Each structure stands twice: as C-alpha cells, then as structure tokens.
Length: 440
Image 1 (cartoon, rainbow, N blue to C red):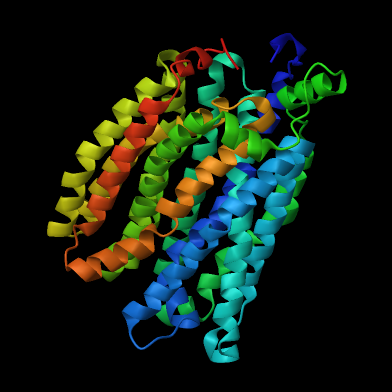
Image 2: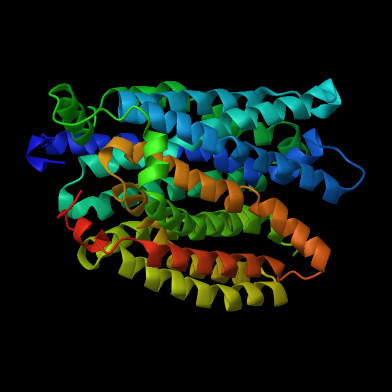
C-alpha cells in the first residue's frame, strides 16, 4: 500500500481513538469477565445438579459454549469491518454485548422458571460470544491503523491494557461485593449488580465510538479501490485462506499462548483456588485484581520494546520465561495454598504474561494487508480462543478431577507455550521491518 495516500490523523483524533478503543473494549470485556468471577454462584442458581461438581461443570460448559460462536462472530464482523469500515463494526459489537449482559442481569433463576433459565443463560452467552468474536480484531485494527508507523506495538498494546483493566475492575467489583454483602444477599441479588451496570456499555460505548473518524489506512484503501488503483476484495476470507496460510498458522500459534494464559490464570485459577484449594472468595478476587493491574502496567512497555527490537524477539523471550516460571509458581500454590502463595503465583505469572500479551495484538494485525486485516485477525484469534481458551476452565477442572492431581492445569499451560513458540518461529522475517514501519 502506498503510504503517501494515507492521511495523517491529528494528535487529538489519535487520542480520541485510543480512548474509544480502550474504554469501549474494557466495557466489553468487563461484561465477559464477570461471568467467570461469579461462576460458582451462577452454578447454584441456574444449573442445579446432583452434585456441586456437576453443577459447576455445567456452568463452565456454558462459559465455553459462547466461544463456539466466536469464530462465526469474528468472521462476520471481520468481513463487515473489511467491507464497510472498522468504526461501524465496533458499534455493532458493543450493542450486542450490552444485550447479552443485560439478559444475564435480569434473568430469573432455575427455581423461578425451571429449565428455561439455563436455556436463556446459554442464549445470553451466545450473544456475548458473537460480540466478543469481532471485538478483538476491530479494536486492535483501529488502534494500529491510527498509530504512527514506528509506534504500532505501543498503540496496539492498549488493546490488552483494556482487557486487563476490565479484569481488574471486574475482580475489584467482585471483591467489594464479597466483603460487604452477606452470603445470602450476594446470592440473592448482589451478583446481579455488575451485570446490570454492564448494560450501560450500549449507550456509553456507542457514544464514545461514534465520535471517532474511520481508520485513515482503511479510507486510503477504499479510495484506491474507487480510483481503480487496487482491486476490491470481495471475498476476504477466501483470500486469507488461499494467500496467507503460513501467516494464519503463525498467528494462531501466537494467540494460543496468550489465550491459554488468560483463561487459565485469570478465569480458571480464581475458581480453582476457591473450590479446589479452599481459599476465600475475597482473597481470590483481591489477588486477581492486583495481578491484572500488573498486566495493565507492563503491556505498553512490551509494545515499546517490540517497536525497538522487533516482535519476534520480545515474544520469544517472554514466552520462554513465562513457561519456565509458571511451573514452580503454580506448584508452590498447590503445595501450600494461601493468600500469599496465590498472589505470588498470579502476579509473577502476570508480569511475564504482560510481555507477550502486549505484543500479540499488533502481531496478529500487521501480519495481514489492510484488505483482509480485520478478517485475518478475527479468524486466527478466535480459532485459538475456541480450541484452547474458552474450554480451558472446563477442561482443567475435568483434568483435576480425572487425574486426582491439582498440578494437571500447569501441563495444559506448558503445552500452550510450546505452540506459542512454534507460532513465533513461523512469523515472517519481515516482522522486524514492519515493526518500524518499513513495510505494510
């Protein structure tokens, strides 16, 4: 793409895009995160079963089922973003997330409406999953295409900052409710409050995103198409599969390491610590809040390092360090469960996670040309999340039960590290050049 055709956005508009992407994305993931934080309560209210274990497994399966539609949402919203623009696609995702979250907040329990309750819960999760499928690619593409060429890693890292912000705020809300409400009140109505507040993402998020311009790089591409200088991409998905198979596999591998780290250490570990290790909900929620705050702080540093030293170098070093450190930290938690060992495990792992989390968004977007960028990022990211992320809590609870070993989840993590490193090694050698804006 000829870079001189791309208009340069004003600093004020770039700031507005960063704010719109971070806050809008944080609103989305806050609603997605609180389901995991209140999974134990939701299990009792919506999925009663013969045993507490079966009830929790049904709840985690419902958490995972939303990931089945994420590739569908990612493809359709990615195609929409590649055809009509990033801005319009992001407005759709935030409206859908508000609908799904609002349903959960007001949904009657199994005791009130019987089997309709879990059915409607699944429907709400499917709507959330469809929305989340398009959010990552849409928000990241906007951030990257507005960024200065030599700061794409830094700007792209704000995608993960917003996710970490959502997890941190969600955990803080869960902690405040847990320590200030009785167990009866929390189960009766307290758990609904964050879902009801989450309904605000619709009007607030839409308002924020409606005030930003369309991506200058996408506009430059559409102008080239209108002038006949470039062929319109009518089938981005077909082009992606035909012309970029290696890039797609590399992206999936990189995304696997990130998504497993998120769904094991941010979503699964709090449930595991409460149910399997016997730690208090208040301690678990506080530790999760602190660890996700660490991610939020260090992701931009990772982005800056990747702008200077290249994506591949930062990804390889951070994934290797994470894989080495995760085992002893998790083992210590399992052998001597306490608030302090939980904080050490979550914060230690989160520090290292930050350095590949921060680089993943720009890696998954700049590897594809603008004509298929939104579709490419959406497809690869959501395939990784579908296969390795969404079912991670369910699979790991099952592994613990089946093996009788509380160490089982760490082997799942280590396998994801190997896949992630393989993905990094598949990345094109031009990723270094792209990181300093010499290729697009």
